[in-house]
Image 1 (cartoon, rainbow, N blue to C red):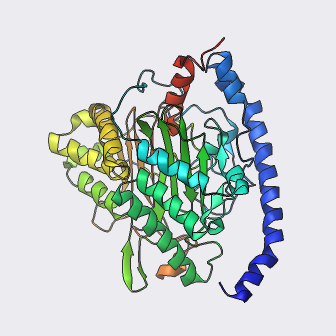
Image 2 (image 1 turned 90 degrees about the vertical axis):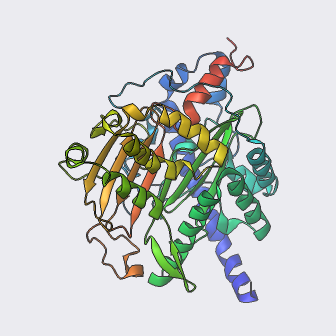
Image 3 (image 1 turned 180 degrees about the vertical axis):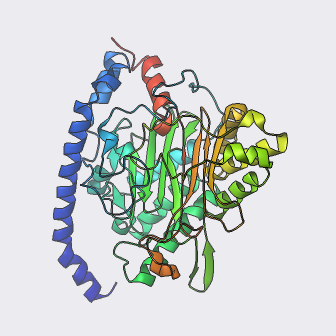
Length: 439
């Protein structure tokens, strides 16, 4: 950094700090609203210990969303709606949760590396950074994420970290994600930077506008997790013992392929290819059932934790063995972005429900077609949605507001029936752990 750059940084620091304080105040207010409306959810946890734990939101940062950010919300009930003030219930088909889908049990997943990496990351932060970044495991901060670029986020951004601190954050992602998952996050960020440069707006679009928050204290026995949140990239990662829930996760890009420093960087193509491979494996009669009669768009993006969506489309028990594998291959693209042992446990859970998994399609089925697909079962929800050119349209010669293409993709994976953010496992932990279950 030059002396001039350092001077600019120092000159803007009071302004940034004032903005952060105002931002924290807004989030504190939102959290108070949430907890004022959350008595029903707390009551279901059982035991005075659970009440006390859930009522205490004093660990670490205070923060909450500003008013509605610009840009598409990424799902029904978007940021301007702030539906996060509702009690968490989870995605359902009819407003009623299916019980006994998720249990606390041994999975054989090695969580020690991610625990160690998270501890090291937190230890590497300054006291102020740690205060801004660490929340209780039951904090509403889990739900305050968005894929929109201009959404005001809590935590510590990559821009606020030193190189050594960034390396500790990278090590945490490396411990949690597979090689493909890590590469996907890096490519999304690289394209965001390059596209921002192409349109002359790196203030809004860059590779460092991604934020860390840690929920709880990294532990081998107590629940905790982390969130990595920014434009087109959101990872929620919950840990309880050797169980991991990596959802909701949002993956997207605009454009999905771009020259960066002389290299063509492509991202989000695996989910597109897997989706098209599946739809083209169907017979004409099957496609008639799977393809919706009307346009579809993402239904469970940001601020849609409690979306209600009936099963629609083609049911898994109507598929051949090969077609079932191709259907599961769509989901596996997302699941395999976690470490291999996490992915194996998750795919085993999902595969047990393949017969009652539904798939809905809208749009074309050619190799270059824009389309929407939803895969929906009792234990998994995946959406892949080709978008029209957005704020980064100029980076690839498009005009904002044009027809959808594969050059702008939004996608999400969730766990229906109450286990997004590991919340069903967290509920069971509070009910069954002797040191929490006190009357």
